Structure formats: C-alpha cells, structure tokens
Amino acid sequence: MKNFTSAYKEIDFLVFFFKRLKLNTTDRYKEHFPWISLCGRERNFVRCDDHPIVFNQIIKDNDGNMLFCHNHAGPKLTVLFQPDKLWMDVENGRVYHPAGEQHGSIGLVSSRTAIELSKMFIYNDTDNYVPTHFLWNDKEYVLDSNWFKHLIRK
Image 1 (cartoon, helix red, strand yellow):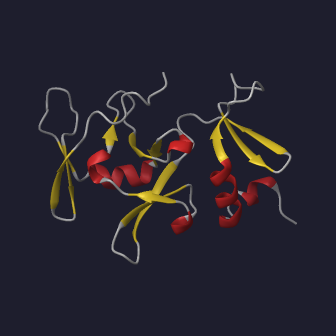
Image 2 (image 1 turned 90 degrees about the vertical axis):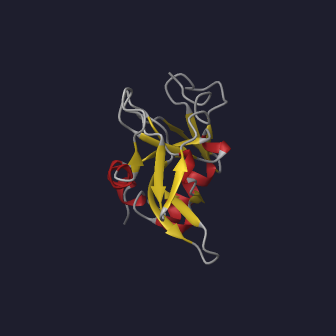
C-alpha cells in the first residue's frame, strides 16, 4: 500500500504530475494556489515557496547535449541546460534557470546543485556581488542578465 508521501518518490508519478502542472487559470483557489495539475477529473491545486520546477541534476544525453533534470525525475523531466542563463538573485541567494513556458519559464536550482554550480561563477561586478560569467566545461559564458526580469513575481 502506498501513501501520498511515498508517491512523490516514484518517478512515474512525478512525470505524470509535473507534465500536467501549469498556472492556475481557473477561478478556484487562484489566490492561494497559483498552480494546478489536472489528473483526469481530479484537480491538484499547488503552491510552493518559490517556483514549482526545481532543477537538481545535469546530465548528458546520447547526442552530447547537456540537460537539466528537474523535480527528481532524472532524464524523464529535463530542459536543455543553458549555462549563460543561470541567474543568482543576490537578495535571496537562490539560483534560477529557464524552465518550460508551461511552468512559468523559470525554475529554481536546488540548494545542493546551486552550491556546486556557484563554484563556477565569476564575479567581475564586485560592487554588487552579482556573478557576470560562468565557467562550464572549460568555456567561459557571459551571463545573460535580462531573460528573467519579466518573469519574477513579487
């Protein structure tokens, strides 16, 4: 017998749930639950502290592309890893990366993964403590500081 908590550890359930997750555009509970995952007749209203997509692992696919896995589903839930699109919010210390449009186009990088990636940030703007470059696979990327500005919900 499985309970609700153990279901979140099953990859098939996570894939099912997150592929159906989207902004709550219904009139129900929108103020308190900005996300919804539709599962047949069932409506799962969701809220989170930040963003529902949480990146936790970078892998290489069969074609050599780097993929950012999210929500602990391994290679079954991924987006293309874009090292120049990493963004660190200096106000809260969190790191973000683009996600699918269905998921608000922005995802949070898990703390553990963000700590590992932060070792590769380069800070040329020492006055603001904002990373300006990212060193990935021996290549230095200029960080795009504009992609996220219209996405952040205050």
